[in-house]
Image 1 (cartoon, rainbow, N blue to C red):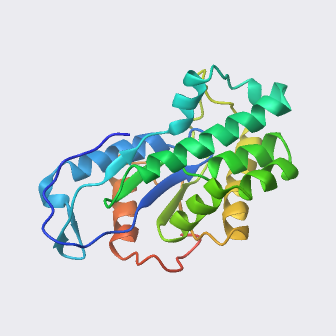
Image 2: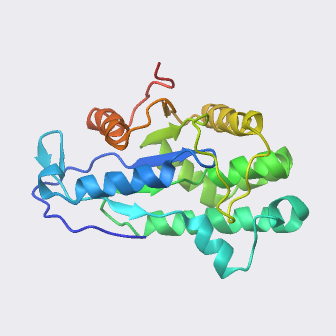
Length: 225
């Protein structure tokens, strides 16, 4: 988890931001661009009040994979290891969010990612077990009070980085995106889709900032045309 220093002049606490979605949809690139935006003190404002800059929660799954010697292949080759991996990722996400304290954050992925992977590669029973955990319940509550942006799959930038489990086709990739949307809806977590046709870094940052500036932790639109 990375942090940025910025003077706080008020008690205002903006909504946290989660950037989620299928593999290779530009999530980490977008989080880094948002972090760069808030590196400037003049940009540390919300509803016309000076705020602290966000803490940045980097993708916790990579750290879990390295720490516990998992590989992407474990997700499909061993049901037991796949479930254990998702449980560890869930707990790591909760710990990262708990460490923020009174600040606010932008998170590269969320507590829903382990659920989606369990649904996709293990089964609904495993996903239900994870969703019944105290860790997931707490993470879901955090998301319900936050701005959740789903980066839409479909752009021409799908590539294998050797770490993540990759979709086998573009259709599989789009199905993964749909699973994110339907799962969030079923759990009562509102979201906004960042269209894959919005490709420029500045455009993508502006899209998120526009939604964040008016976010109040209540119900949000689900799709943006």
